[in-house]
Each structure stands twice: as structure tokens, then as C-alpha cells.
Length: 425
Image 1 (cartoon, rainbow, N blue to C red):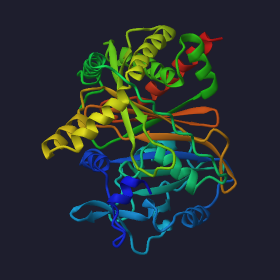
Image 2: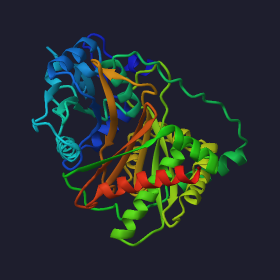
Image 3: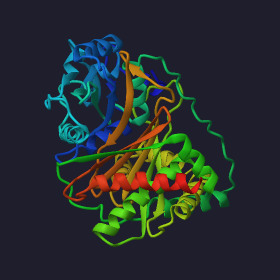
């Protein structure tokens, strides 16, 4: 257990109070917005039975795991508390759809499940097993965001599901940066002008309870190499540029108004060996939708992300919000308003590394794995990417009453990524 959680834990009662960041995430949930994320893990035929999957997960969840706890209170504050008589089988079930589903029917079933709420009287995760045409299966695994961010969710997948033990990814190094007062002030001026500007977009609509989902995929290695060759850019730069291109095509056909879109880019701050459920920050970058050429758009995106990385915007944001949370109740409230500000950006695009080598579950190959994240007020679309075994899998979640064809954005994103591959030769 991390030092922070050890200090907060109450061993006698077995309760683990939520961190301030986790509590802020919990408060985002409401009548219109669910608080969970989702992994759609497709298993090749022959897929294991529900009973086999329940036994696998049950034998791997320890009694002190956060996955064996439910939401409660400790000392009047939200906390994870042990659930008496916990059984993993109760968190897993056959999907109501029943019959073997084809890809369109699977997406519809995932959208239906994603719109359902997790039961707060039990641990805040659930796996619905969907049988697929041809003998495969899809594990629709919902985890409350308070319980896990993208990095933590992949750790849970490695712990509970995969047959093979997978090495933990190395933590990035954090170097100290000495700055004189003039440079520090210049940095903060750039930081505030970049991160707290207001954004407007056609994605800012009245959010309801309906959800639609779409999937896309592109090769990781080829896209990484193409981005570097074309613009000295990263894989994530290429992802942001491709998503911008997919959104550009949708806007042209639905709204006809192009410009720049402000995209929020989550940045993991997890360190090796820690068990924090949520440890991330973010920066915001402008992606020029008016630029039709995918290579020129990629170069502009790379310029934007490079400046934010050079100035360590994500770390600065984390330090700023941490300072506000540790101040007075009024400052803590200000911190929450900053995090919940719906119009500082127009679209959230996350990217989490998954297993680099093939993995299986009870002998069934994991054929694909898409990630989904909840939309938010003023943000009718959310994009989540996860890499696995040489492929980058993208999941698109949308309110269909604001964005009536999220499949079009997904297809456009895939098309833009392939255009970069073609341009790189």
C-alpha cells in the first residue's frame, strides 16, 4: 500500500478513505452522468464459460483488494470498506442480450450496459460476458473511475485476467528543473494562458442519459514510426491529429464550421510500485481542424504538445491543484471547479499502454481490447485509446442526441491515421 493510503487507512475497521482526487471524481457522477470507465475485451473462440471466468477472478482477488470493497464512510468521509461475504461471482454475469452477437449488436449492447449504473451497495465494478457469433466472447468490464484510472485498470486486468504474468511498465523519470524567478513567471504566464482559455464547439450540447459507442484500430508501430519520420512527433501526437481529422470530416458534413479544437490530454503520474487508484494530470492542446493536410496538422500538433512538455504543464497542473486541495475549504472548492470546468476544453482524448505481447484468458486469445470513458457536461464525445500487441484500439463514447453518428468520427479517425501511414511510405 502506498504511504498516502497507509496514513489514511484505519486497520481496525479495514477502511481506506478516498483521496481528495478520488472524492472529486465521485462528485462528478449525477443523474445524467455515470462515473465508470469500461474495457471491452474480446476473446477468440473457444471462449471460456461464465463459471470458468468467475472462478479465475475469484481465486485472484485477495480480501484486502480494493476490488473486494464497497463504497461507505469512515469518520464521516467517503471510504472503501470491506464487503462482508464478498464473492467475485456476484460481480460477473451473462449479458442480458443472451444470443450470439455480431459486431453491430455488440456495440449496441455495450452502449446499453455503459448507460447502466453500478450498484453502490457492492464493489464498484462488474463484468458482463457477451457471447459472440463464431464462439468467441466479449468481457464488458465496467470499473468506477473512483476505483481506477486507465493505468490502474490495466494493472487489474494483468492481475485478474491474463494467463501470463506481464512485467510492470517502468516509471518515467522526474528531473528537477532549476529556474530563476523571471523564467518561472514566464512559464506560469504561458501555463495559465494555455490551460485556462475557454473553448467552444458543436460537441457542447445538452447531455442526456443515452449513449452510443464506436470502435476503431490502427497499427501502433507503423503509426509511431510514421509520426517520427514525418514530423519528429510521437504516437500520441499522431493519435490527436487523427482524431482531429476524424472530427473535421464529421463537422464538415454536419456543421460546416471549422477552426481549432482544444483537446484535454490526460498524463499519467503513476510511479512504479504504488497502488493509487487515480494518479494523473493533464494538459490542453489546440488541434487545427481547418488544416486539411494530415501531415501539416500533425506538425502543428507536435509543436503544441512539445511546448507543453517542455514547460511541464501536466506536473504544474498537478502541483497547482494539489496546493488548492490542501488549502482552505474555499480553495478546495476552487480546485474542484477548475477540474470540473467544462469549457476549458472541447474534447478529452486519453491513451493508456496495454500489454505489448499477446495475452490470453483461460487459454482463449485476447483478440482485441477497446477502452471507453464517460462523457461529461459540455462534452458529448469522449475518446479513449489503449494499445495491445501492436495495435492501438480506440473507443468512442457519445450522446447520440448531440452527435448522431459517432461511427462517422471513428471511421474518419481511422482513415486519417492511415493517411499518415501512406504519407510516410
